[in-house]
Image (cartoon, rainbow, N blue to C red; front, side):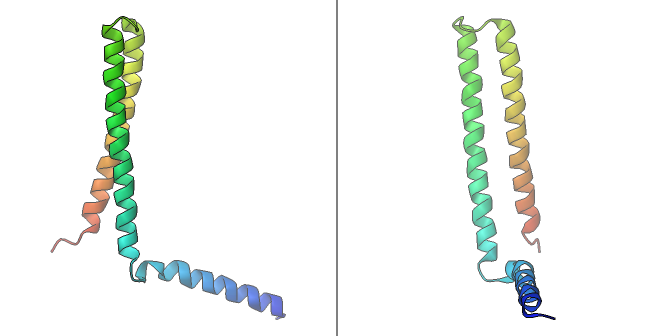
Amino acid sequence: MDAVAVVALLVVMAAAVIVIGRPLWPGAEAAVHDRDALRRADLEAARLAKYREIRDAELDRDTGKLSDEDWRAIDRRLRSEAVEILHRLDELEGAASSATPSG
């Protein structure tokens, strides 16, 4: 084996050890928790923003800025997006509860 092949093999082996062993390093669990907390905060902000959009569309309909037909199309889309956000929040909560030891 030439020197380049040996170095390449060592680099690949080191990368494999790092990738496989990383979850076992101290602080890995805290990093996952922090990532999930940030994702949860982002989804909560998106949920609140979507609710605000729904209320704004209703106000636009009530004040005559949107026809009932236009409002229905917008409302359907916004509510569908809100449901998707809620599903993602539920998935995140489910993943967090299944990761917590029960016993």
